[in-house]
Length: 294
Length: 242
Image 1 (cartoon, chains in turn red, green):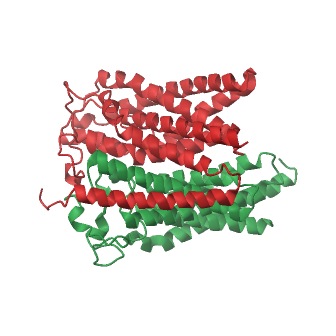
Image 2 (tube, helix red, strand yellow):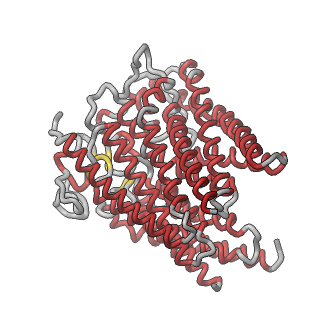
Image 3 (cartoon, one colour):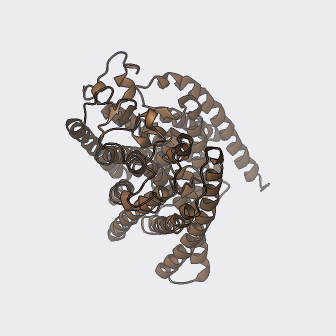
């Protein structure tokens, strides 16, 4: 039992780390979360852009949809095909994630076309390359994140012993991962990648919002370039946050006693709080103070 | 447990969930490092934390109500504190800004004219980028987030427990059904405070804390209705009508 829980925790942590990276890149490649407002605002201040702008819904419900869809298909296939557990789950998860990716492609294309069309008054043009080149990339990231979340749900249900069914766990994890990705990794996209022509080391003033960087390293910037940048930092930070959450939560239950797990989790929370305060001290020494008017 | 206690658990849990959203620092503009708080909408963030809590609580389903509430609180708080750490890491190394409270810096928070962080005592004003309303999550908002996580986790687990008790007589798949219903009730109570928070809050020192009575009342009314609906469905089903 102990070994199964240990294996489950390690596997869950790894899958969660990968899912975090892929989900963040999916949202960055499609400007899907809060920075979407900046891409939407740009044409209004005469910044015609070639960003892929699909925000089908808020990132948490959108991601929960892909994960729940993939997990439902995977669970049905797994129970109906009659293969051994491991190949059955993997095959089911692959097919489920593929269906989720195709649906994301359909929703994403329509979302992009309608969002760009709504900017017609500001002379924004619907560039086909801005849709067709990032679309397969975005779909691939959705495929990978849905696959990881589905496998993770099977691990939590099967190895760790959650009483919830697999699709429900996938929906819960999809929501949680969407909330984490839109609040950690997206800062790297929204505050740094979109505003690379501003000096590093300050927030984006409200008056500058919408003044996004439309020129890339070579010609006009396309959303294909975005994961190239955010994979270096935003993605891993999201993966680390979600991976740590799943791993610590699973690992704390390894003793089998609920109260040991609760005490362990609160100790870790206190430890993380200390790290947060040290990080604040470090950043205060390194950046700022800022002067008015600069 | 009698049905009335189970319904009271659902109502109290729903109200706690509504109140917890006020404590969790969140702001969508935070994604551009232009506002203090975790960079997403308060409702969705609290919902994400609450679901982690419900998932954690489900593992302790057979260990008694108190253990279940504690487990929910631990899961929820862990999610919030890790997200604060991740957000601060992204702000520190991705954007290059220190965590600072905009409202405290401008002297408009509940702390009065003090412009210092309550926990660390560090001056906030010079570290706000001009033209923004702060960025990141300083120590006082992190503590507030932890309190919010505990309230949300306990609230979510209470709703889960209440629904579980009500539907035990009518269903085989009690955990799955109560998890789904608890998530739904959690979502409704999370979204209600959005009308008073208007997309942004800095946690327990934000002036919007004063609007808690409105949230309390709206969540109380809605949770009562939801508890009544679940009770009616379970009673109707247990008569053999479904």
